[in-house]
Each structure stands twice: as structure tokens, then as C-alpha cells.
Length: 387
Image (cartoon, rainbow, N blue to C red; front, side, top):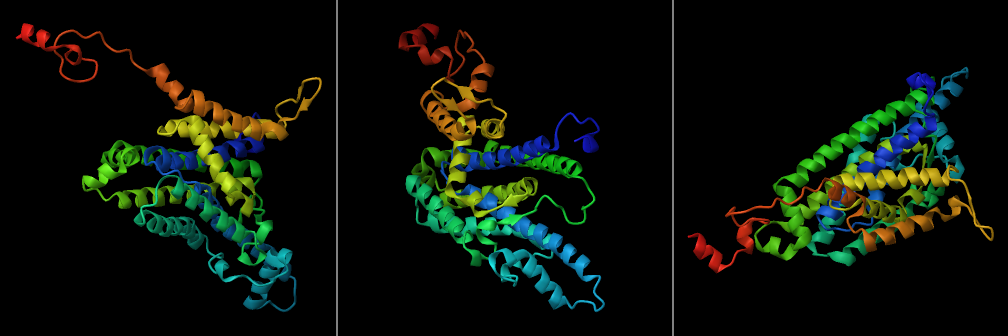
């Protein structure tokens, strides 16, 4: 880290962990808006997160491979034709799955601008189509959650196939190597991605804060609490749900596009349903219905996970059994979720609410019908005596 910051206090790997954590916090507040505020328990939002990573990963892998191929072909006496260059790139990328042709879905991989557009369009269009079909059929509750999980499972199973066009189980690798910056150290690159992730998280937080604090926030909370009543009042419930579902999917895609260049690799396991379940657990532990709670939950679990699974936590020797936290971390996470659900349904964010809660004033006299006023406690005799 010394080359990037000049101190050497923080390692490059930890800076990457912090950057990835900020991306997960951004996905968590998006999940909180769709679940905690709108009442849609989506078990598929990490699929949108992964799709954003795949879209930017295509350009990263193509551009890096192209640079290597051009460097190798430069020494040949006869210049290579564009088709030969394309074939060489295809062999380099897809040789691991026994192919040498670039699939059609890599048609825009040569352009960073087009792939960045796909980071937004692919998750957004998938969410738009899925949401339109589900919401117009008025699928709600656990049935909608099952459908989102089925969508995620189908997508991950498709990507596991070698003929999916995205290298199957091998996924996309070497994403930490940024084309055009081969001479730049990982310390500098990790710091740049950290600040980019921080800015994206701040922008996402401000955007969602603005949405949930205005009239739309009141409507989507009404949909969460009593969808039929909101529909009876004349609001287009399906339109609001579709907007929130699609917007949060796009934000998750952007978060994934920042996350995976820091992780260095993406494969279909990142899109498996369990990943979206983890996202819901983070939001529940942090406190759903509170944007800061979702962010705290994601940061807390992510950093704790890195500590336990990265060997930071020393093994616990019970005499008759030695607990290795790399094996028991998921058990601990599941137990935490159960305990929070039973004893602290407001999550970690609820503790902050308790600490900053203002004491109720000891009011006297007629201060109106609001909660805490004495009028709510006064009977007819007190009303006549006062008049």
C-alpha cells in the first residue's frame, strides 16, 4: 500500500476488501429499498450484481487478451489479418473450454463504452421483463420470492454450461489487470477502485434517501403495508413496484461492475441463489426499512466474514474439539440471523434508534390530538371543565 498512499499502514489486500465491502453495502441498500420499503422479498438481486460483473469482465478480459495477442504477433514478418487476430483472441479466451470462436454475446467486448452500457441495460432489461410479467399477474409474497429464486437458479445453471459463451464454470479471470495500466501497481489500482466504490455508494445512498423520503417513499411503504388499499386509492401499484424493482437491479449491476475488478474473478457460483439469500440476511441483521441499517449489516458481515475465513480469527480449542472458523463461519452467520429475527427484529440499526430516541415530553394543557398530548388521555369531564 505504500506506493499508493505513502504510509504502508494498510495492505493492498485490505484496501480491496474495503472497496468490495462498499460495493456490497450499495447492493444491500438497494435490497433494502425493494424489500424493507416496498415489501418485495427478492431472492434474485445478486443475479443482477453478477451480471454487472460479467458485462465489465468481458471488456477487461478481451482488451487484456488483445494486447497480449498483438504483442506476440508483432514479431511475425507478415502482419496478421483482423480475422487472424480475432481467432487468436478467441483461442486464448475459450481454449479452456475447447473452443476458439468468440460467441456473438462478445460482439461488443472490444468497446468499453458499449460494455458499460450493457452493465446498465442487461440487469435493467432482465428486471423489467421479469417484473412486468410477475407484477401484472399480481404475484406477491412468498410466491414472488420463489419466482425470483427460480430465475436466479436458472441463470446460474445456464452460465455453468460451457456453451453459454461465458466460459462456463471457469468464469472470467484476471479482471484485476486493467488494460492500458499494465505498469500500474495493484496498490494504486486498488486505491482508485476504493474511491470509485465509495463515490458510488454515496451517490446510491443519496438517491435512495431521496426516493424513500418523498411522496414515492410514502406510496411504496403503503404498498408494503397494505397493497390493496393503495390500489383502491388509485395509485398504479404495479408501476411503482416495477420501477423500484428495475432501479434497484440496475444499481446492483453497477455495484457488481465495481466489485469484480477488485475480486479479480467471477464465475456462475457468484449468481447462485445462496448469494441472494446472504444479501437478505445482511439486510435483516442490519435492520430492514433503514438504509443505514442495511449498509451497517452488509459491512459488519462482510468484514467479519473476511476476518473469520481469512485466518484472522484464532481457532477455538475446547479440549474435546477444535473449532476452525473457516468451517464454522456459515453456522455462526445462520445462528446470528436466527437470533436477530427472534430477539432484535429491528437489527443493528434498531440499536441506533434506541440510542438516539428522544424522551417524550411531560406535556400539560391542550396541545392537540397528536401522540403524546394530554388531549388523547382526557375524558369528557375534563373537556367540559376546561370550557
